[in-house]
Image 1 (cartoon, rainbow, N blue to C red):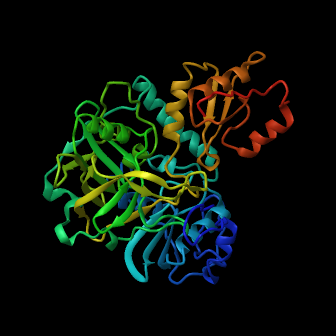
Image 2: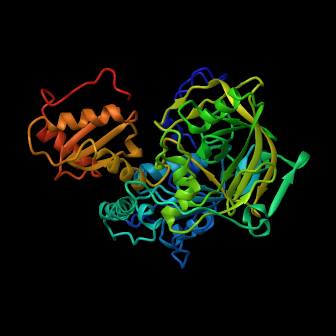
Image 3: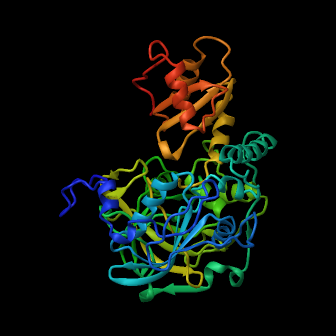
Length: 489
């Protein structure tokens, strides 16, 4: 990751050089665990590393983040580590090693019990890559993975979700959340207010050497607007002090639109509740565009989460505002975002393309007013640009459902987080020119589709080798290529 403009770090930070320099403890990945697909083990090399032992665990729907992690462990998809030195960025190096060894879609989840931060051992655990493996797309809905066949597993998950969409007119169903009493809400086990608040006490990481600092980078920011209704989205939050977080909501986010609408109404502050350690369905909705927000029609995304999992989300009111939050999250960070105060510098930060994103010179921020959490809260960390952030079958299915109205002969799409910005699609081609027409339609609709590759229906778009084979053996750049100079991507 290049790091322009950072004092004391004028040279680029190379991923390969970083892995090589993260200490002898990373000469081999510190675990003896295997992925189900490869049954291929890695040597132990860090104190306390151990393989996860398959065991009985909760099944879908998962009410808590811990239930989900237990399910991963029972399916052999979790690696545990006792103590890891994050001052030397060893959790980052370990995860680089895992993706190098297994690939982004077969790397296991990782659990670090304690991490060294600023010279102090901080109790976690910190969890990485909790929806990265192919099999999580099936496990999330209570479906059995197909042994030894990730493509079949993914297709099984897509069939389940496509049927759900078909039954509900092309949208995911809704079941309204239910409010429970405060004494039943796990997120209220500990309440911190006033001078006792110190977000630095918790195991939030500085993930990359060139990042601006430690981040709450997996928080769902819950808000409410009188016209737009409720909303939550994943916006990274740089830790700026014991009671202060950056709020990196950008103009394309619904949250930013809510901030600006409040400012236009003359409001001075906006209350927010940042939820950390969400159940897995709330997480995927927070992090991917699976909810259809029609202009002017508010929608409760927690109701969509309930509908997708077939069971309502239990909610509880925040301590210092009226925002309803998932009752069984690991942590809720409540606060206010000032709208009339000076904006602040945020970043740089390692981004989804695997490069360092530039600093934002004028960014919103929030004052923390209360923190509530479970006893010994579990912290999820995103290794952005290294991992698949969330299960992708729900987004693929909602995109396919929408795109078929414009491309009726569409068979499948694959928008892989391992090749972000590239979309693969297969069509049932019946005449000349259909590939270019279909690809151009998609490119003009989807801003993230910078490169669109269209193949015949017999090519598995999930298989990168098969797609490249088709490009090499069946495609002629002229005349079967179009460059759109003014497309959204």
